[in-house]
Length: 263
Image (cartoon, rainbow, N blue to C red; front, side, top):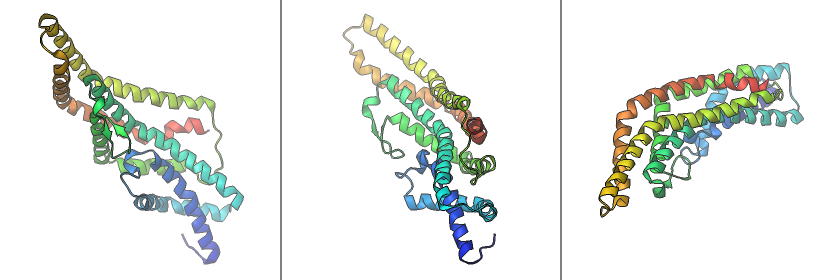
């Protein structure tokens, strides 16, 4: 990629301004890319490093088909929209992990002890915060940044930067419903063994209270259920981690999942 003269610099800056929005949109909903975790300047540097890899194709495209100032804004909006679509599908895995933790905390009665989640900047339950941070650690361990880079570059092959607004298909909106269904399935199914163990403990305490009414079961319920929750969760962790690794690997399919919506 050769940059010659003022026109070359202008084309380079235009290419950069058209390449960055998609990556910025992808980072927008990811919890480990939030302003609470990574400062804006660092996040911009990460986006810039990825944008530079895709920049040559956009630069040569602009040399062959220059765009006017009036065309730049619609292209930028389109790029942000595509980035947000990909971000939604990638971030849903982290939301599912948080929902899993919230189900467990709700069952053991610990939602009252909500505290500030440093990743999102909002109040969250203890196990939900733990699950969110564990998901980020597993994502990095599983090569999540390589997967994100692959998603970005595959998306540029499916929807080139200089291709104007895609033809949105109403039939493709089912992908959103399927993804939300997958989030709930992830949270409910994976929480089921732990919730079942706590429910059995609660039933046992109810029987104890039936025959020993002087025993204050209400005050015993939460610590007993919390202990059982942590014990079962510890035994369950290897299976949970293996399932999460498979789900992270499936993120490579995000551009293909969104493709029917955009054509």
